[in-house]
Image 1 (cartoon, rainbow over the protein chains, first blue to last red):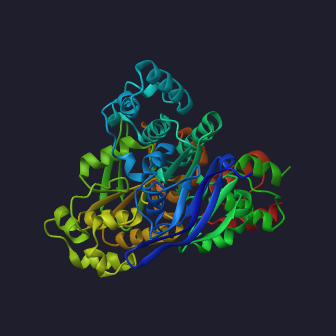
Image 2 (image 1 turned 135 degrees about the vertical axis):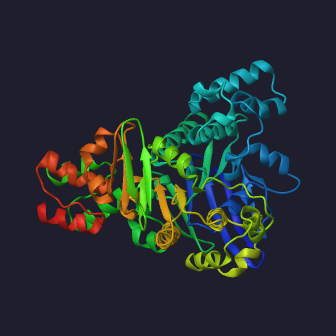
Image 3 (image 1 turned 120 degrees about the vertical axis):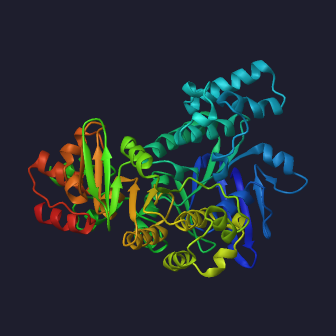
Amino acid sequence: MDDYILEVNNLTIKNKSTILFDDLSFKVQRNEGVVALLCSNSVGKTTLIKTLAGILIPDSGKISVNNLLLSKKNFKKYIRNISTILEDSYNYFLCDTVIEELEYPLINLKYKKDEIEEVIDRVINITKINGLLSKMISELNNLEKVKLLLATSIVHEPSLIFIDDIFRFLNQKEKRIIHNIIKSINYEMGITFIYTTSDINDIINLDRVIVLNKGKIILDDTYYNIIYKDNELTKMGFEIPIMIDLSRKLEFYNLVDKIYYNMDEVINRLWK
Amino acid sequence: MEITLDNNKKTINADISKSIVSLQEKNKIILNNLINKYSPIIVDNFNDYFIGNNVINEISHYSKYPEYSLIYEIMDLLNMDKSFLERDINSLSRTKKIYLNILRNISKLDEIIIFLNPFLGLDNYNKKKIIKLLNYLKEKYIVIISGDVDDLYRYSDYSIVSNDFELKYDKTDKIYIDVKTLIKYKLEIPTLSYITYKAKEEKNVKLFYSKDTRDIIKDIYKHV
């Protein structure tokens, strides 16, 4: 039997008279782990995530998480099942220090002191923020802020986390660190992630990527199948990362037989 | 116009007029040096604190006498119509906020404008618009860029690199194909320069340095 963590049915979202998303339907199974929604700029990524998170009301359609329909009646239960990291979250923290920021939601949820310590111990190990606990939030760099956002989003152990393209604040090296942390959280805690991005570097190796353009789902496949549609992606405005572009062109001339991400490997493949 | 930059041991005078000058993010000392000396306008993609209700209001808050003719020219360049000026800031997408950030800064007019990570978070379509804008501005102002090394190599005319002790300043092509110096300075190496360097160093294959993937492919094809 299918075990869906998220079901989106016939979702339509408008911005005044403009249709941002038109009759959108997709389902995500619990075991899919990390799913990316790849959208180019200004298509309404933030609006979509806010709608899935129950912050905005759609014009029509239904959204369910863990078989719980998003509605006025179920709202409290619905939001206990999810966490949402918005782009704005990056600039707005509630507390002064990292440890206070981590404790804050747990205190609100009436966790006991020893429970709080136990949860925070687990969270800091997974998100690798051991060195940050005593720091002021104002002292954190971009990477550390994103790590903290991930850490605070998992303290109440949601089933699903929606992320609105927070990766854009990071360079490629930092992005790799965050994607590894996301994979660890999924592996260790079984939390599913759904995130939006406009950068192909953020979808590398994912088992499921949904490409949205002009309000519709254009592609819904694994990263490996999607990246071979590079011409379509370019037409939609996505930039093909340089190593992927190079590999695809070398493949065209039968000089390599797969996509390489490491330059040394390409050199060794070309001149054995 | 000439700018002067110094660090521990060396001072350089760089003629950066009509050029897009690039600086890697790691070169914080040079960047601070530039900021302290010239108090330039800094356009930072991360800065999305807005105080106005709508776009025009925000621009007026930022600059007492905004240069509207320039603002209109830039809006035209970015394919935005005048109705953008009336838009409520809360209704703007992240990309449009980046454009507003550029408009409000440029409305102040100044000799030096620093764009910090101007391409971050932009898709190819919007990136091309920013490149068009930078090329347009270099006729009027001095534009300094820092950020992704592949982008710096592709889009800038001149580059400044430093390892905190030595300064190097030259045509981009020369700096970014001098891979040994970049390694010595622990700076990032553009992917396309690296393939040419590695092919020579490890396989004794002499490829041309190029900023265009297609040219590199053609050259590889000849040598494989």
